[in-house]
Amino acid sequence: MQKPIILFKDFTFQYHAQAEPSLYDINLAIYPGEKILIAGPSGSGKSTLANCINGLIPFNYRGSITGHVEVNSVETSKQNVFELSKIVGTVLQDTDGQFVGLTTGEDIAFSLENNCVPKDEMLPLVKSAANLTGMGDAFLDASPFDLSGGQKQRVSMSGVLVEDVQILLFDEPLASLDPATGKLAVELIDKIKKDTDTTVVIIEHRIEDVLFRAVDRVIVMQDGRIVADSPTDELLSTDFLRDTGLREPLYVAAMKYAGVKITPAHHSSQIDTLRLQEGDKSSINQWYNESAKTTKQSSETELIRIQDLSFTYEARDTPALSGVNFTIDEGEMTAIVGTNGAGKSTLAKLICGFETPSSGSISLRKKDITENSIASRAEHIGYVMQNPNQMICKPFISEEVGLGLFNRGVSENEINERVEATLEICGLRQFRKWPISALSYGQKKRVTIASVLILEPDIIILDEPTAGQDYRHYTEIMEFLRTLQKRGITVLLITHDMHLMLEYAPRALVFSEGKLLADMSSSELLCNPELSEKASLKETSLFHLAEKCNIADPAAFTKCFVDFEERTRNNA
Image 1 (cartoon, rainbow, N blue to C red):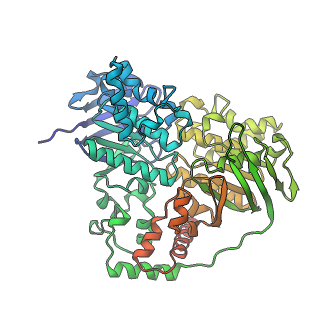
Image 2 (image 1 turned 135 degrees about the horizontal axis):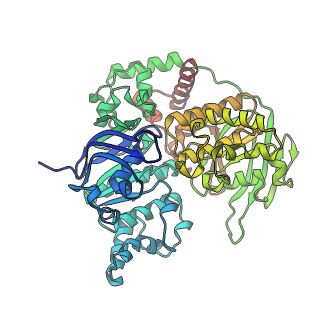
Image 3 (image 1 turned 90 degrees about the vertical axis):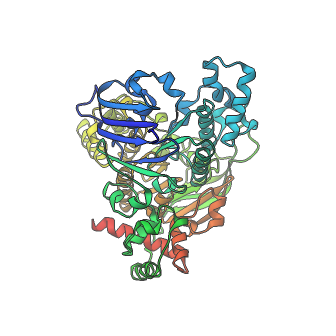
């Protein structure tokens, strides 16, 4: 009988600094060659479990342990991090935090250099690892920090594969990737698994995106415990993901709304393998016809006008933005989407005044603000950056969130009241006295959002607001933004999250190579395969479900689903 390559037996772990265990009575066996998805809400113990596998617990993060963890049939406590790193290769969520070399080649070769591998032996190993992840020789001399998000991730993967590891451990590999690049990443992980027979463990919130390629089992964690461990088709036949506060695949949710009784025979783990009976198709069509509603109209009061806007960075010949024109109405929530490097973040910098346009103009309430200072714009425009570490400047959460109000001379009592209310909405109230350094990446993200939301500007621009968030916190943040929107505050969302677009942004501005490619409804965009491909998006699974059910207008079906979900949330 095959032995597990990863084995937890009656394992409990409690950090020295915490009053309660982070993991309770874990019993888990993962076998060689398996591909496992670990999902669960933030704080459920996923990352702690991963740190027990790669040896950071007990060697770097100290705490009380009962039970046993074995990797490759040896107790981890009897090994060390160096020994475990030759068995377990970890790819972090924040790839920038994993780079140590000045060039891609140096970074991939880092572990080989530590092992004193001769240079003539090292180069073929580096090239082999780079080729395995699709990077090839062309990028070996490039700086890792000049690469796209997807390329950075491939470099990180090459750096662990060069050791010929037996286990690949991915910590939210899709968090910072656009949908098309995320799709390629999932395909690459699957290809590596098949080519090398490596055991793959993926920790990820974006369940539907990971399931684009089959996994052997899904493990669901909640409150430090494993609450589900089953094949994907069996898990999706239940309401377990939804009851645990996790996002089901959209096509599965639509089928359940339509009253379809999903069983493992539906093979619902992937939209491509989904098998629908005629009765299922009839139920879905009937639900669609009964649930369709008329679209609400916007206020049509102009807030922002962008006219013939162009911008080129110094030392670059190609414009980052070229001839961009659009208007945003007061109270709109609009998604700005497109591939990495399309000009989305550059547009935000120009609106905020961080950069000066090469040509064109920006108007706020029909007044030209192109020459206005950053400070004067900040009275009306709030900006939340993608990387929270670039925004945080105070040691404690409450101080960071209240800093903007303090700088504006608001009274201490009012600051405290507004800080408490905002932290509650953003799911951070229980951490209000914590130091920033003790927070996870996703928690830091919520702190930066809170620090801008508390100021209640006329328009808020958020760069990837839900990256690294579980479905519950994602929903809380977006519902809070929606309450601000209903009060007349305009929200611009720079995002790769297609679920966010569909649920919360009726309109999408699509950028590609510095140009505004399209200005259309999100449901129409994600039911347009050709346009989605140009923008490095991918069409929604609802589009494919509509096709399988012979629904003539997939975009209308998608909009119907979004409206139905909003009504369901409001009723709840």
